Length: 114
Image (cartoon, rainbow, N blue to C red):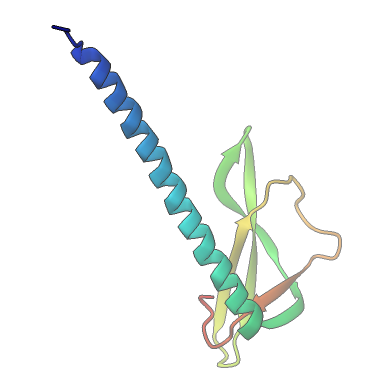
């Protein structure tokens, strides 16, 4: 008759659970990326490109190596005369402005949330 150690099963169970968690995280992130790519492709088809809009940089609230990261902010006037404030992604450079000080915007004016 053989004796089995219960500790070995616990280690195997822990290893399997950790593996499953990593796989779930990867699947969730892939689905998020696919959803964003789909939205970008739809915006490329329906969106309107506006070039040369003035922008400003605002603090994003994220600090890396004691340097506050900034994000691009554009105020855009819709055809209905309402103003939409659009926030870009956090910049990872330390520049406070670009050479021309202008930004290009691709927007779906019927659905600015896009």
